[in-house]
Image (cartoon, rainbow, N blue to C red; front, side, top):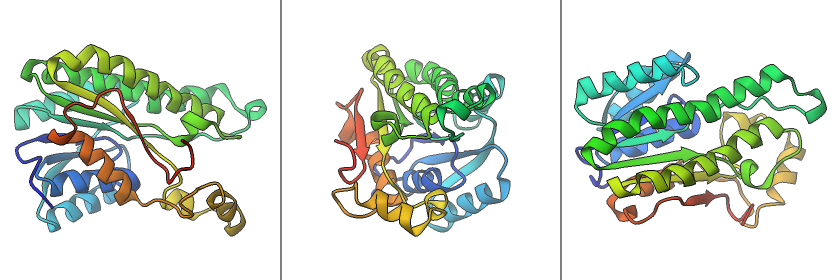
Length: 249
C-alpha cells in the first residue's frame, strides 16, 4: 500500500467489524494514525487494532457511543490532546431496526435515527471545528443503497440513510471554503456478518438485481473511502459514491 495518508489522523466510528474494520485497516495501511471507535464490542475492536498493527499500521481504540453527544465531544477532545489534529472522519457506525411500517415502533425509529443520523451529525460537528482551524479535512459518511432506492421492511433505516445524503451535500457546501471535503459512500449488497445470515433463496433473489452478478466485499468499500480521503479526491465534495455493482444507478 502507498503512504499517501502519512501524517494524517483518522477516526472511524463503528470500526470494530465489517465495513468499519476494513476502512480502519485500509486507512492505516495508507499511513494514517487511526482511532478505532466502538461502543460495546471491545474484543472485536481489539482484534481490529491488532490486525492494523500486524499489517504495520498505527492506531488506538476510542470507545464511545455515537448516540451520546457529550461522549462524542469528549472523544474528539481526546484525539486532539493525543495527536494534535484530526484530518479524517469516517461516520460508519449504524444500526438497522428493520420492520414493516405498520409494525415499526416509535422507540425503534428514535434509536436508529439517534445512531445513524444524529450520531453522524454530532460527530461531524465536533470534528469540523478543528478541521476548520487547520484548514484541511476529509469527512466521509456511510449511507446505503437502501437510502437511495428504498427497500420493503426498512423504512426507518432507509430514512436515516437518505438523511445522510442530504446532510452530506449541505455540509459539503458549508465547509468547502476551508479545504474540507464531505462525501458519502453508498454500499450495496456487501459480504458481511449481517448478509451471511441470509437464506440461500433470499441471497439469490438479491444477486439477480445486481448487474455485476455478485456481492461486493468490505475491501471494495474501504478502497472507495480511502480514495475520498486522499489528495487525489481534493476536488470531489458533495459526492455520493456508489459501491453496488450496478444495483442502483
